[in-house]
Image (cartoon, rainbow over all chains, first blue to last red; front, side, top):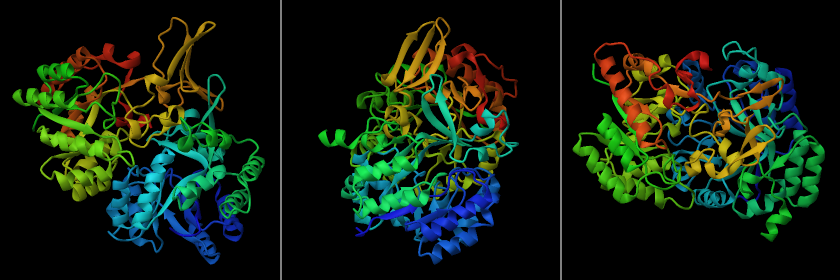
Length: 309
Length: 328
């Protein structure tokens, strides 16, 4: 197990304007205390052209800053042009790929190093070991897994000599569809969507008819309304053998978010103080850790409560 | 051209016998535990029932497939492996699997047992399918309900195995096997527990003139008292988003692709799948009979009658779902 747990900045899941995208990654390169950055469009291939020509410069700047860079694959691959793009990503890239769909295993040379993202199904040791044998160096576990499963999988990851990562910050991707909900909500078809998903930089809130915050729509993806956060639980997760933590980009001060996780991992900040500061950074957000520690995903289980239990 | 194979659900031994007698070519069912994606109380087969079910089906010349299509829990692979071992021991014609590790186990331990790829594996293109064919010797893939008929046709020209498509029953609007919505509200999910929006977490309550249905801590539907109250399946609920108020994800419709049978045949599909292991024996019987007629009509080049089964469908309205591109 590596002595120092690492921080991964996951791929941006939202549709941001290209200039905002470039500025974001420039600042991450220069200022954010993350070890690893995953770049590229994951959610919708229609968005891919917007930032495609910006990726090269971002990679260079991130690498110069000493960060490891991976390229993300699409989560749902159906169209011929999507298959072609994914094949080229696997075969042409000088950088390792983070796979978000098992289609990529068709294209990657057996033994070539890759990472398994949180959107592929790694629920048990058998699958984790199989992927490690195939070349996986890091597995970010599905966010719906409870702590008992994470503990078992982190142990298997340790035995296989690979990093085991958990979803540590950000709205949780819960589902993917062939249908675009942003388009549907705006009365548009997917083919003429006008890229309305770009209006919501953190996704569009879905509330119940009783006004309860529930979900967030991000094009063809459905996410949690809550921001998952394990900032208060890093000690428990480290003890479980987790070696890496994933921060998912949002339209907030991600440099500061990464800073809080880093300080906490290095135990320069106590958990309660860190959690308080995160709340101040995102005053509108509601947080959850229920997938790991609660009865259901949307729940926020307070530390004190759990220590008693 | 060969007749399309009709693959029918059986949640109980009684439904299995009804489906066999009503003209199923193939039955699929699961063991009574979390190894299958319809892990509902009172449903599914004990070991003895499964063994007897295989015997009953085989006597009638009908095949039996065992769905072991949830993702084994970390730390407890034995239950899932035992399900594969027992399916092989009872002489099942195939197992329907979704998990990579379990596919590897089955291919290694039971090379002679036919392996089908569950819709839960979400293999949505020819390259993904061929990965499973080449790596684990998969003989048939159940296609995700995110593809159009045209896309299915293209896939069939490019893969080294058979395809099976859903034609009738409940309709997942999300890619199956990749959905944690239910877990977000209830802690129980299709992938981990074989359950979506489970009844154990449903509460109906009257508020003034409304009937409210809730799943876990969230309101899924609110209808006037006396109006038909749909079951609060999370993705079929009524919500608000921006200015929009309504069925954000999907209307409470179910799939009926009977009129597309001829197109599926032309697209090179091998088998038609009816959803609904959780449904009653009489439902199974009626649906199987109707689709038997439709498949025979197609094989004889006759037109297929639409909407014959409408009274059996949830919410009384049906859709061809993703098979028509406009659905997206």
